[in-house]
Length: 246
Image (tube, rainbow, N blue to C red; front, top):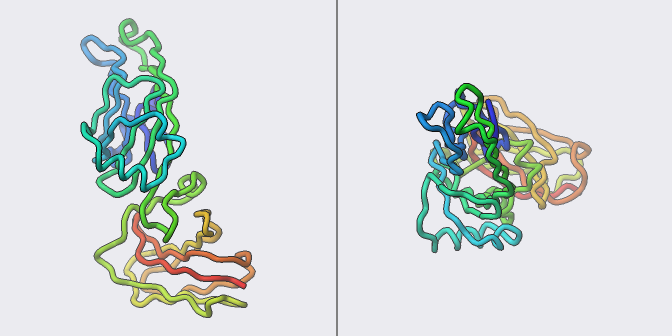
């Protein structure tokens, strides 16, 4: 996080955000403000969207998985939306946006541009660099870590939608030529049908228009193997089912 237009970070989409953008994606915000009466590099980040953080041991980063992070979180104290006096090498666990999604984040570099106390008419260029891993509960049975390429290419699903009871059925299963995904009921908005392989990589994405209840696909669109099909909409997973293509 550094400089004009990059004072905040969206950990879901892995992008920088500016101060003028809405707060819902601001999981981390560099709180140094050049307009302060006596501006200084605060070495602090805050959340504007319900994300909470707690400091943990540096060794947690390399071996992290969802269950180990959740256990650490449950035993932790000092959870806060603001983390102050951060230092390079420190590690934090974050719970994103009032959901079950967890992040382990390591501060890799902090650099003061020297402008905070001197340059009252310039953009703040204080620098906070970090690495992170994101883990989501229940998006795929048996898969707790959502790989980086999924994060970069697909909107995250934080939780199952409790307002809809739609289920999906895939037939034939295994698929030998053409396959059909059938919804138990229609949905009044556009949905995605997403195929994940068992390592969590997206291998196919299709669209269901509002009120459509069938999605057809051909065997040749995806290589032979085992997959998870997910019906997704509005950062929600409505239903999922496991299937095989022979």
